[in-house]
Length: 343
Ligand code: NAD
Ligand code: TYD
Image (cartoon, rainbow, N blue to C red):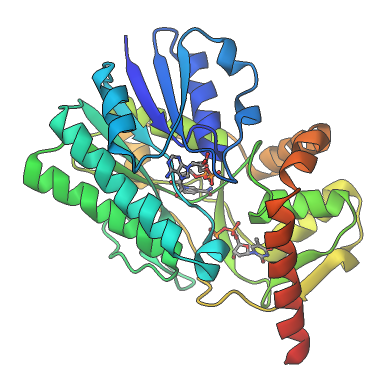
Protein backbone atom coordinates (compact mmCIF):
# COMPACT_ATOMS: atom_id res chain seq x y z
CA UNK A 1 0.00 0.00 0.00
CA UNK A 2 1.32 3.42 -0.99
CA UNK A 3 0.94 6.18 1.58
CA UNK A 4 1.32 9.65 0.09
CA UNK A 5 1.83 13.04 1.64
CA UNK A 6 0.30 15.59 -0.73
CA UNK A 7 1.01 19.22 0.11
CA UNK A 8 -1.34 21.95 -1.12
CA UNK A 9 -4.09 19.40 -1.70
CA UNK A 10 -6.87 21.95 -1.11
CA UNK A 11 -5.73 24.04 -4.08
CA UNK A 12 -6.59 23.66 -7.75
CA UNK A 13 -4.19 20.96 -9.01
CA UNK A 14 -3.62 19.29 -5.62
CA UNK A 15 -7.34 18.65 -5.09
CA UNK A 16 -7.71 17.27 -8.61
CA UNK A 17 -4.69 15.03 -7.98
CA UNK A 18 -6.11 13.69 -4.70
CA UNK A 19 -9.35 12.75 -6.48
CA UNK A 20 -7.33 11.18 -9.31
CA UNK A 21 -5.16 9.06 -6.99
CA UNK A 22 -8.02 7.85 -4.80
CA UNK A 23 -10.05 6.91 -7.89
CA UNK A 24 -7.17 5.12 -9.69
CA UNK A 25 -5.37 3.41 -6.82
CA UNK A 26 -7.65 1.55 -4.42
CA UNK A 27 -4.66 0.72 -2.20
CA UNK A 28 -3.42 4.34 -1.89
CA UNK A 29 -3.67 6.40 1.28
CA UNK A 30 -3.41 10.18 1.22
CA UNK A 31 -2.48 12.73 3.85
CA UNK A 32 -3.24 16.26 2.63
CA UNK A 33 -1.19 19.01 4.33
CA UNK A 34 -2.55 22.44 3.46
CA UNK A 35 -2.36 25.81 5.20
CA UNK A 36 -5.66 26.92 3.63
CA UNK A 37 -4.46 30.26 2.29
CA UNK A 38 -6.85 32.31 0.14
CA UNK A 39 -6.27 29.69 -2.60
CA UNK A 40 -6.94 26.64 -0.42
CA UNK A 41 -10.54 25.55 -0.24
CA UNK A 42 -11.89 22.39 1.38
CA UNK A 43 -14.95 22.65 -0.88
CA UNK A 44 -12.58 21.43 -3.61
CA UNK A 45 -12.52 18.08 -1.78
CA UNK A 46 -16.24 17.75 -1.12
CA UNK A 47 -17.05 14.06 -0.74
CA UNK A 48 -13.39 13.02 -0.43
CA UNK A 49 -13.31 13.71 3.31
CA UNK A 50 -15.62 10.72 3.83
CA UNK A 51 -13.06 8.35 2.26
CA UNK A 52 -11.31 6.37 5.02
CA UNK A 53 -8.09 6.48 2.96
CA UNK A 54 -7.93 10.29 3.21
CA UNK A 55 -6.71 12.49 6.08
CA UNK A 56 -6.55 16.29 6.16
CA UNK A 57 -4.05 18.24 8.26
CA UNK A 58 -4.28 22.02 8.32
CA UNK A 59 -0.70 23.26 8.61
CA UNK A 60 2.20 25.09 7.03
CA UNK A 61 4.94 23.34 5.05
CA UNK A 62 7.39 25.69 6.81
CA UNK A 63 6.42 24.17 10.18
CA UNK A 64 9.02 21.46 10.89
CA UNK A 65 7.05 19.93 13.78
CA UNK A 66 3.89 19.43 11.75
CA UNK A 67 5.75 17.98 8.77
CA UNK A 68 7.91 15.69 10.94
CA UNK A 69 4.84 14.34 12.76
CA UNK A 70 3.19 13.45 9.44
CA UNK A 71 6.33 11.79 8.09
CA UNK A 72 6.69 9.82 11.35
CA UNK A 73 3.22 8.44 10.68
CA UNK A 74 4.79 6.41 7.84
CA UNK A 75 4.87 8.10 4.42
CA UNK A 76 6.21 6.35 1.29
CA UNK A 77 6.26 9.33 -1.06
CA UNK A 78 5.70 13.10 -1.05
CA UNK A 79 4.05 15.02 -3.87
CA UNK A 80 4.69 18.70 -3.24
CA UNK A 81 2.10 21.04 -4.80
CA UNK A 82 1.82 23.68 -2.05
CA UNK A 83 2.91 27.09 -3.29
CA UNK A 84 2.00 30.68 -3.75
CA UNK A 85 1.08 30.36 -7.41
CA UNK A 86 -0.05 33.64 -8.97
CA UNK A 87 2.40 35.81 -10.92
CA UNK A 88 0.44 39.06 -10.45
CA UNK A 89 0.40 38.63 -6.67
CA UNK A 90 4.15 37.98 -6.69
CA UNK A 91 4.62 41.31 -8.46
CA UNK A 92 2.58 43.14 -5.81
CA UNK A 93 4.37 41.40 -2.89
CA UNK A 94 7.08 38.74 -3.15
CA UNK A 95 7.86 37.82 0.44
CA UNK A 96 5.33 35.03 0.89
CA UNK A 97 6.53 33.48 -2.37
CA UNK A 98 10.04 33.09 -1.00
CA UNK A 99 8.77 31.86 2.36
CA UNK A 100 6.44 29.17 1.07
CA UNK A 101 8.02 28.25 -2.27
CA UNK A 102 11.68 28.35 -1.24
CA UNK A 103 11.93 28.04 2.56
CA UNK A 104 8.92 25.69 2.71
CA UNK A 105 10.43 23.43 0.06
CA UNK A 106 13.77 23.38 1.88
CA UNK A 107 11.99 22.37 5.09
CA UNK A 108 10.27 19.48 3.30
CA UNK A 109 13.50 18.36 1.63
CA UNK A 110 15.45 18.37 4.85
CA UNK A 111 12.83 16.43 6.79
CA UNK A 112 12.28 13.94 3.94
CA UNK A 113 16.04 13.38 3.81
CA UNK A 114 16.29 12.83 7.57
CA UNK A 115 13.29 10.50 7.61
CA UNK A 116 14.54 8.63 4.51
CA UNK A 117 11.38 9.12 2.46
CA UNK A 118 11.43 6.82 -0.59
CA UNK A 119 10.33 9.29 -3.26
CA UNK A 120 9.77 13.05 -3.54
CA UNK A 121 8.07 14.86 -6.42
CA UNK A 122 8.54 18.61 -6.83
CA UNK A 123 5.65 20.04 -8.83
CA UNK A 124 7.22 22.87 -10.78
CA UNK A 125 6.32 24.98 -13.77
CA UNK A 126 7.50 25.87 -17.27
CA UNK A 127 7.76 29.48 -16.07
CA UNK A 128 11.20 28.70 -14.60
CA UNK A 129 12.54 28.68 -18.19
CA UNK A 130 11.52 32.28 -18.89
CA UNK A 131 10.16 33.51 -22.21
CA UNK A 132 10.41 31.92 -25.69
CA UNK A 133 10.69 33.36 -29.18
CA UNK A 134 8.29 32.12 -31.88
CA UNK A 135 10.26 29.01 -32.94
CA UNK A 136 11.42 26.62 -30.25
CA UNK A 137 9.94 24.91 -27.18
CA UNK A 138 11.30 24.31 -23.65
CA UNK A 139 13.13 21.01 -23.17
CA UNK A 140 14.40 19.70 -19.84
CA UNK A 141 17.83 21.11 -20.80
CA UNK A 142 16.66 24.68 -21.46
CA UNK A 143 18.55 26.95 -19.04
CA UNK A 144 16.50 28.40 -16.18
CA UNK A 145 15.79 32.11 -16.71
CA UNK A 146 12.83 33.09 -14.51
CA UNK A 147 11.37 36.57 -15.04
CA UNK A 148 8.77 37.01 -12.27
CA UNK A 149 9.28 36.71 -8.51
CA UNK A 150 6.91 33.68 -8.66
CA UNK A 151 9.03 31.98 -11.34
CA UNK A 152 12.25 32.86 -9.49
CA UNK A 153 10.93 31.29 -6.28
CA UNK A 154 9.91 28.11 -8.17
CA UNK A 155 13.30 27.95 -9.93
CA UNK A 156 15.05 28.31 -6.56
CA UNK A 157 13.05 25.39 -5.20
CA UNK A 158 13.93 23.29 -8.27
CA UNK A 159 17.62 24.02 -7.70
CA UNK A 160 17.34 23.00 -4.05
CA UNK A 161 15.81 19.67 -5.13
CA UNK A 162 18.61 19.22 -7.64
CA UNK A 163 21.22 19.95 -4.98
CA UNK A 164 19.69 17.42 -2.57
CA UNK A 165 19.71 14.76 -5.30
CA UNK A 166 23.36 15.43 -6.19
CA UNK A 167 24.69 16.03 -2.67
CA UNK A 168 22.62 13.64 -0.58
CA UNK A 169 21.61 11.04 -3.14
CA UNK A 170 18.05 12.19 -2.39
CA UNK A 171 15.21 10.47 -4.32
CA UNK A 172 13.82 13.70 -5.78
CA UNK A 173 12.18 14.26 -9.17
CA UNK A 174 11.05 17.58 -10.68
CA UNK A 175 8.09 17.96 -13.06
CA UNK A 176 7.60 21.17 -15.03
CA UNK A 177 4.14 21.60 -16.47
CA UNK A 178 2.61 24.24 -18.71
CA UNK A 179 -0.52 26.31 -17.89
CA UNK A 180 -3.32 24.18 -16.40
CA UNK A 181 -7.05 24.78 -16.68
CA UNK A 182 -10.07 22.83 -15.43
CA UNK A 183 -12.47 22.59 -12.48
CA UNK A 184 -11.68 24.23 -9.13
CA UNK A 185 -9.14 26.75 -10.43
CA UNK A 186 -9.18 29.98 -8.45
CA UNK A 187 -10.68 32.75 -10.64
CA UNK A 188 -7.65 35.00 -10.54
CA UNK A 189 -5.99 32.94 -13.30
CA UNK A 190 -6.84 33.69 -16.94
CA UNK A 191 -9.36 30.99 -17.89
CA UNK A 192 -11.54 30.84 -14.75
CA UNK A 193 -11.43 34.64 -14.45
CA UNK A 194 -12.57 35.12 -18.02
CA UNK A 195 -15.28 32.47 -17.72
CA UNK A 196 -16.65 33.97 -14.49
CA UNK A 197 -16.53 37.50 -15.91
CA UNK A 198 -18.15 36.45 -19.18
CA UNK A 199 -20.94 34.61 -17.33
CA UNK A 200 -21.64 37.80 -15.36
CA UNK A 201 -21.21 40.07 -18.42
CA UNK A 202 -18.22 41.81 -16.83
CA UNK A 203 -15.19 43.03 -18.84
CA UNK A 204 -12.45 40.52 -19.70
CA UNK A 205 -9.19 42.34 -18.88
CA UNK A 206 -6.65 41.40 -21.56
CA UNK A 207 -3.11 42.47 -20.68
CA UNK A 208 -1.14 44.43 -23.29
CA UNK A 209 -1.86 43.45 -26.90
CA UNK A 210 -3.31 40.04 -25.93
CA UNK A 211 -0.86 38.24 -28.22
CA UNK A 212 0.97 36.52 -25.38
CA UNK A 213 1.00 32.76 -25.89
CA UNK A 214 0.39 30.06 -23.30
CA UNK A 215 0.50 26.28 -23.79
CA UNK A 216 -2.66 24.86 -22.20
CA UNK A 217 -3.14 21.46 -20.58
CA UNK A 218 -6.23 20.11 -18.84
CA UNK A 219 -5.59 19.47 -15.15
CA UNK A 220 -6.71 15.84 -15.62
CA UNK A 221 -3.91 15.26 -18.12
CA UNK A 222 -1.43 16.89 -15.73
CA UNK A 223 -2.60 14.61 -12.89
CA UNK A 224 -2.15 11.51 -15.06
CA UNK A 225 1.37 12.68 -15.95
CA UNK A 226 2.30 13.28 -12.29
CA UNK A 227 1.00 9.81 -11.42
CA UNK A 228 3.16 8.31 -14.20
CA UNK A 229 6.24 10.09 -12.91
CA UNK A 230 5.44 8.99 -9.37
CA UNK A 231 5.26 5.35 -10.49
CA UNK A 232 7.96 5.23 -13.18
CA UNK A 233 10.09 8.38 -13.17
CA UNK A 234 13.84 8.25 -12.59
CA UNK A 235 15.25 9.85 -9.47
CA UNK A 236 17.30 13.01 -9.98
CA UNK A 237 15.55 13.75 -13.30
CA UNK A 238 13.34 16.52 -14.66
CA UNK A 239 10.19 15.83 -16.74
CA UNK A 240 8.47 18.51 -18.83
CA UNK A 241 4.69 18.08 -19.08
CA UNK A 242 2.61 19.76 -21.77
CA UNK A 243 -0.06 19.02 -24.36
CA UNK A 244 1.21 21.01 -27.37
CA UNK A 245 -1.79 23.37 -27.32
CA UNK A 246 -0.67 26.95 -27.80
CA UNK A 247 -3.10 29.84 -27.96
CA UNK A 248 -2.84 33.60 -27.60
CA UNK A 249 -4.77 35.08 -24.69
CA UNK A 250 -7.02 36.86 -27.19
CA UNK A 251 -7.91 33.52 -28.82
CA UNK A 252 -8.77 32.09 -25.41
CA UNK A 253 -10.93 35.13 -24.58
CA UNK A 254 -12.78 34.86 -27.91
CA UNK A 255 -13.41 31.13 -27.52
CA UNK A 256 -14.89 31.64 -24.05
CA UNK A 257 -17.15 34.46 -25.25
CA UNK A 258 -18.27 32.42 -28.26
CA UNK A 259 -19.04 29.38 -26.12
CA UNK A 260 -21.10 31.52 -23.71
CA UNK A 261 -22.83 33.50 -26.47
CA UNK A 262 -21.38 36.79 -25.21
CA UNK A 263 -20.27 39.77 -27.27
CA UNK A 264 -16.59 40.40 -28.04
CA UNK A 265 -17.08 43.97 -26.81
CA UNK A 266 -16.50 42.54 -23.31
CA UNK A 267 -12.81 42.25 -24.22
CA UNK A 268 -11.05 45.18 -22.54
CA UNK A 269 -7.37 45.86 -23.14
CA UNK A 270 -5.65 46.92 -19.93
CA UNK A 271 -2.13 47.86 -18.88
CA UNK A 272 0.37 45.06 -19.44
CA UNK A 273 1.89 42.93 -16.68
CA UNK A 274 5.47 44.08 -15.94
CA UNK A 275 8.06 41.52 -17.09
CA UNK A 276 5.33 39.65 -18.99
CA UNK A 277 6.70 36.49 -20.66
CA UNK A 278 5.75 36.55 -24.35
CA UNK A 279 5.45 32.85 -24.99
CA UNK A 280 5.62 29.49 -23.18
CA UNK A 281 5.69 26.14 -25.00
CA UNK A 282 6.66 22.75 -23.59
CA UNK A 283 8.35 19.98 -25.53
CA UNK A 284 6.95 16.86 -23.78
CA UNK A 285 8.98 14.34 -25.85
CA UNK A 286 10.63 12.80 -22.80
CA UNK A 287 7.27 12.08 -21.10
CA UNK A 288 6.01 10.60 -24.36
CA UNK A 289 9.06 8.48 -25.22
CA UNK A 290 10.34 7.41 -21.82
CA UNK A 291 7.11 7.15 -19.80
CA UNK A 292 4.68 6.51 -22.65
CA UNK A 293 2.38 9.31 -21.44
CA UNK A 294 0.01 11.11 -23.81
CA UNK A 295 -2.47 13.90 -23.05
CA UNK A 296 -6.08 12.82 -23.68
CA UNK A 297 -8.15 16.01 -23.53
CA UNK A 298 -8.22 18.36 -26.56
CA UNK A 299 -8.44 22.04 -25.59
CA UNK A 300 -11.78 22.52 -27.30
CA UNK A 301 -13.47 19.72 -25.28
CA UNK A 302 -11.69 20.59 -22.04
CA UNK A 303 -12.59 24.25 -22.31
CA UNK A 304 -16.26 23.46 -23.01
CA UNK A 305 -16.40 21.12 -19.98
CA UNK A 306 -14.64 23.67 -17.81
CA UNK A 307 -17.10 26.41 -18.81
CA UNK A 308 -19.90 24.01 -17.96
CA UNK A 309 -18.32 23.28 -14.57
CA UNK A 310 -18.13 27.00 -13.70
CA UNK A 311 -21.73 27.48 -14.81
CA UNK A 312 -22.95 24.58 -12.68
CA UNK A 313 -20.87 25.68 -9.67
CA UNK A 314 -21.89 29.31 -9.43
CA UNK A 315 -22.04 29.00 -5.64
CA UNK A 316 -18.41 27.85 -5.48
CA UNK A 317 -17.46 30.85 -7.63
CA UNK A 318 -19.52 33.29 -5.54
CA UNK A 319 -17.91 31.97 -2.33
CA UNK A 320 -14.35 32.41 -3.55
CA UNK A 321 -15.08 35.72 -5.29
CA UNK A 322 -15.81 37.52 -2.05
CA UNK A 323 -13.93 39.15 0.84
CA UNK A 324 -10.16 39.34 0.33
CA UNK A 325 -10.49 38.38 -3.33
CA UNK A 326 -12.59 41.42 -4.16
CA UNK A 327 -10.20 43.79 -2.43
CA UNK A 328 -7.24 42.30 -4.31
CA UNK A 329 -8.98 42.05 -7.65
CA UNK A 330 -10.58 45.50 -7.55
CA UNK A 331 -7.23 47.03 -6.75
CA UNK A 332 -5.45 45.16 -9.53
CA UNK A 333 -8.11 45.84 -12.16
CA UNK A 334 -8.58 49.52 -11.35
CA UNK A 335 -4.81 50.06 -11.30
CA UNK A 336 -4.39 48.44 -14.73
CA UNK A 337 -7.31 50.40 -16.21
CA UNK A 338 -6.01 53.64 -14.73
CA UNK A 339 -2.46 53.25 -16.04
CA UNK A 340 -3.82 52.36 -19.46
CA UNK A 341 -5.91 55.53 -19.66
CA UNK A 342 -2.90 57.56 -18.39
CA UNK A 343 -0.79 56.60 -21.40
P1 NAD B 1 -3.18 26.98 -5.95
O1 NAD B 1 -2.75 28.37 -5.64
O2 NAD B 1 -4.54 26.73 -6.49
O3 NAD B 1 -3.04 26.08 -4.63
C1 NAD B 1 -1.96 26.17 -3.76
C2 NAD B 1 -2.32 25.42 -2.47
O4 NAD B 1 -1.18 25.45 -1.59
C3 NAD B 1 -3.49 26.06 -1.70
O5 NAD B 1 -4.39 25.05 -1.28
C4 NAD B 1 -2.82 26.72 -0.51
O6 NAD B 1 -3.65 26.79 0.64
C5 NAD B 1 -1.63 25.81 -0.28
N1 NAD B 1 -0.51 26.48 0.41
C6 NAD B 1 0.03 27.69 0.10
N2 NAD B 1 1.02 27.98 0.97
C7 NAD B 1 1.12 26.93 1.83
C8 NAD B 1 1.96 26.63 2.92
N3 NAD B 1 2.91 27.50 3.34
N4 NAD B 1 1.80 25.45 3.57
C9 NAD B 1 0.84 24.58 3.17
N5 NAD B 1 0.00 24.81 2.15
C10 NAD B 1 0.14 25.98 1.49
O7 NAD B 1 -2.05 26.41 -6.92
P2 NAD B 1 -2.17 25.40 -8.15
O8 NAD B 1 -2.52 26.15 -9.36
O9 NAD B 1 -2.99 24.23 -7.74
O10 NAD B 1 -0.64 24.95 -8.29
C11 NAD B 1 -0.14 23.84 -7.55
C12 NAD B 1 1.33 23.65 -7.88
O11 NAD B 1 1.48 23.43 -9.28
C13 NAD B 1 2.18 24.86 -7.55
O12 NAD B 1 3.40 24.42 -7.01
C14 NAD B 1 2.39 25.54 -8.89
O13 NAD B 1 3.62 26.24 -8.92
C15 NAD B 1 2.41 24.35 -9.81
N6 NAD B 1 1.98 24.61 -11.21
C16 NAD B 1 0.79 25.25 -11.45
C17 NAD B 1 0.38 25.46 -12.76
C18 NAD B 1 -0.94 26.13 -13.09
O14 NAD B 1 -1.20 26.41 -14.26
N7 NAD B 1 -1.80 26.39 -12.11
C19 NAD B 1 1.19 25.02 -13.83
C20 NAD B 1 2.40 24.36 -13.54
C21 NAD B 1 2.77 24.17 -12.22
P1 TYD C 1 -2.18 33.48 -15.68
O1 TYD C 1 -3.42 32.66 -15.70
O2 TYD C 1 -1.96 34.46 -14.57
O3 TYD C 1 -0.97 32.44 -15.77
P2 TYD C 1 0.61 32.69 -16.01
O4 TYD C 1 0.91 34.13 -15.90
O5 TYD C 1 1.18 31.92 -14.87
O6 TYD C 1 0.90 32.13 -17.36
O7 TYD C 1 -2.06 34.27 -17.06
C1 TYD C 1 -2.08 33.60 -18.29
C2 TYD C 1 -1.89 34.64 -19.38
O8 TYD C 1 -3.02 35.52 -19.41
C3 TYD C 1 -0.68 35.54 -19.17
O9 TYD C 1 -0.13 35.86 -20.44
C4 TYD C 1 -1.28 36.79 -18.54
C5 TYD C 1 -2.64 36.88 -19.19
N1 TYD C 1 -3.72 37.48 -18.38
C6 TYD C 1 -4.52 38.51 -18.93
O10 TYD C 1 -4.33 38.94 -20.07
N2 TYD C 1 -5.52 39.01 -18.14
C7 TYD C 1 -5.75 38.59 -16.86
O11 TYD C 1 -6.66 39.11 -16.19
C8 TYD C 1 -4.94 37.54 -16.34
C9 TYD C 1 -5.16 37.02 -14.94
C10 TYD C 1 -3.93 37.01 -17.13
